[in-house]
Each structure stands twice: as C-alpha cells, then as structure tokens.
Length: 115
Image (cartoon, rainbow, N blue to C red; front, side, top):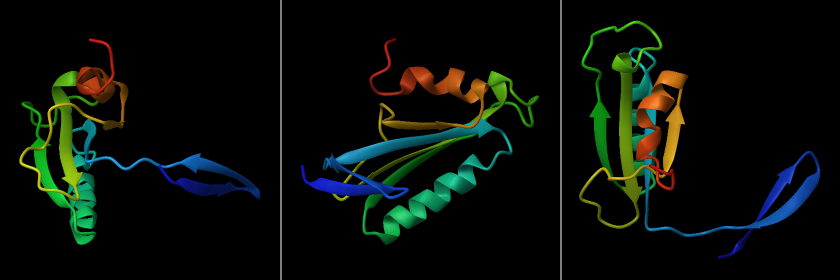
C-alpha cells in the first residue's frame, strides 16, 4: 500500500491506498431513475481507462411500479478490473441505492453484510 495525500479545506491527511483485483458496483433505484444510464456511463469511463468490464442490467418485473415499492426497483451491476473478468460478479463491493426500497431489495447482496 502506498500513501495518498488527501486535502480538504487546507487540512491534509495521509491515508493508505490499496490495490485490489476487481470491483463490483451496483446502482439501484426506482424504475425511471436512470440506473441503466448511470451504469452505462460508469462502464464506458472504466473501459476508456483500459479496464475489462462485465455488466448486468436488472429491469423490474413491473413496468412503472409505484415509486418506492420493492417491485419497481431497477438496477445495473458492473464488475471492472485491469485483468480479464468473466462475470458481472456474485457479491457487490459497492452499493449505490437511490431510495429505501432499493436499499432493502439489494442490501443482502452487499459483501460483508450479515445475512
């Protein structure tokens, strides 16, 4: 691990950085919140930096379910790495949830969360 200088409002602290093999990120929110758009943009940027990527869009069963219902949660999962990857990942390392229904639906897939 090498130190990284992190500066905020004139204050600075040295925090260690860590190199990892791959990262799995899931964006989730209500249908229509733009999760596929955000995931696609993140995928494109990651690929432009030379990473290998694998994606898994997750569309809800209901079309335009009522806002905030677990049946209307949409998602986009992405795995990226500087090495070859073959799947979009089993456990999520980072979860970006836009509302409580998305958090409730996806929390148990988050790596390190007690099941």
